[in-house]
Image (cartoon, rainbow, N blue to C red; front, side, top):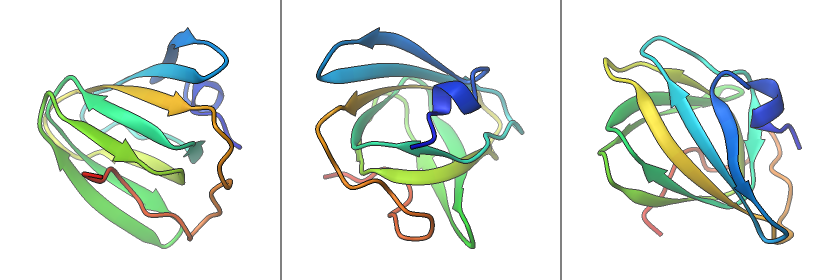
Length: 114
């Protein structure tokens, strides 16, 4: 697993961790990009509205999120690009339960409502 805190320390920071969850804070500015990294099953809470492009190999998806939303983020690998005009600010609550490790090109990109 490629840890976003290690690959993108300007953007991701750990704000809490115990044996069951790890909580990350994510921040970026318009035009900024992340390098490829993995996420386990997580809940994403948006603290700002934002527009992003998530990329996994040849597959990409554009995501628009309102401020104050909570969404499920299934385990996935991706890089990201803030393609909007606002900063991105969100919290990820990562589950530490065992899940299949995402493989490039096989994950569903972005958050879902369930």
